[in-house]
Picture (cartoon, rainbow, N blue to C red):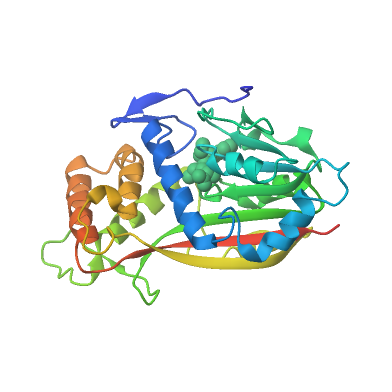
Length: 310
Ligand SMILES: C[S@@+](CC[C@H](N)C(=O)[O-])C[C@H]1O[C@@H](n2cnc3c(N)ncnc32)[C@H](O)[C@@H]1O
């Protein structure tokens, strides 16, 4: 592994391993949460679980080309725990897979055709011009200030006719009919029936992120606008998924709630933005009640894939 990164020294903040360059923890607990979240994407996609089945033909053409002299390659930007890179490398043994992240990846097992580098994408990717057949950036754009430039940089690294996968979660909270919940209120006079504490916490987190990285205009919409800003890309498919934030039906084991796991992950950022710990603990307590209660709440996840015109 190589290290070209600045400002990423790990320090303990609000009980979690953090660095200054990124809003969420970078510790083992977070890597395990990301692995669990990877399981969510696998449920969404079916098939290989690594991308939508609708993209399968395209991916097979790129990563299992009939011409065996070709060396297909894949870039996973913001690879996190490395789980997607590793599973792609296992699925496509002829492809070379590169996982790139601000924070050093330390997977226990790395296939021979997979490697990881520690790098801040903001410092540029000039060395990878037209190098990759497939580029994947999952849950990264939310942390990037200039998303148009980010997409452009990734597009520069794509071979002509290559494909890019971009996806992200959405901080709004939805009901079973996919309508947004109103956030609960801390005002003691307010009736919070049918309002969501998770939604309140996510709105606070969104404000923290907007202060850190700028407006998040794409929130609540699909990701087409982001892709269409890049004239070399042509969007070919999009999917929207909803995932239960509660504990599974009849189960009150709080560790089974993806909502509470995410709330805990954003807690240090919310505290770090100066929101007092009494308020944060009160909201988290109410989220614990919400995710074990009868009101079903869902997160929304958007996924888009686009072709670089060849
Ligand atoms: C929410 S995690 C998603 C990880 C992984 N893509 C997944 O879906 O499991 C976002 C990742 O993006 C990385 N990241 C954020 N900003 C970055 C940057 N400027 N350059 C490289 N990686 C970055 C973070 O370190 C983190 O590992």
